[in-house]
Length: 247
Ligand SMILES: CC(C)(COP(=O)(O)OP(=O)(O)OC[C@H]1O[C@@H](n2cnc3c(N)ncnc32)[C@H](O)[C@@H]1OP(=O)(O)O)[C@@H](O)C(=O)NCCC(=O)NCCS
Image (cartoon, rainbow, N blue to C red; front, side, top):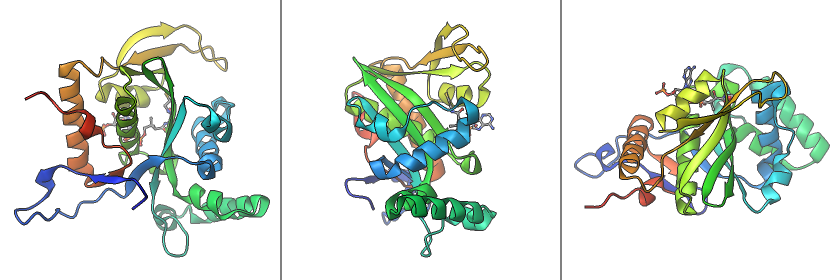
């Protein structure tokens, strides 16, 4: 387990002897480090193509109010990602790792590339947590990684005392909009012709206040449903610790 991380899962995953039911989420969320920066940039380009933000994670991470969180999964003993070795993309990953390690000569970015399955970049200003970027590698979508990244986002936002979370999303991005709606984001405005590449509108989405009891209750239920479905999950900040309800 990574230093400072905790494994979270509801009590009802345990039997009467206190043993878990064995369901363990293969994906975990942790704060990104500079060693992850190249992998983050790669996943962002892979996810957004020509429309990828021009910023670099290495530079962004040095900014005071910017935090990156990555979803990772373990690698096999020979250093290959379990998914990539089983779904046939291992060759591409190996080639990328080899290019990276040759050009950079460092083991850490190489290892990070094979582990980073998704990422979220947060910007905190005044009392809001703004999601600047969120992406799951195309080969890992539909496995709850986007949700895990949102849970980690909420945990971080609650930890720093943000009042709510906000973001902008392309009008046509129904998948992302569905994910956000699932976690209580509502549509609060439109930035017309916001995206330069195709003049598409951006929908501004925001959660209710984290102090809103109804929303806290809903968020708590969502977290519990996630852990029940995906199993014991390792995160660095426990969202449940910040979502206690009054007696
Ligand atoms: C949006 C994105 C991060 C979702 O990641 P993911 O890891 O596949 O998401 P999850 O597996 O956690 O899915 C969670 C929810 O997302 C929505 N979702 C995911 N895939 C979907 C699909 N193919 N169709 C419709 N909704 C979908 C659903 O609400 C889903 O909940 P459900 O399982 O109860 O239906 C991913 O599609 C992505 O990286 N897209 C490209 C980058 C991007 O558009 N980022 C958002 C910019 S604002």
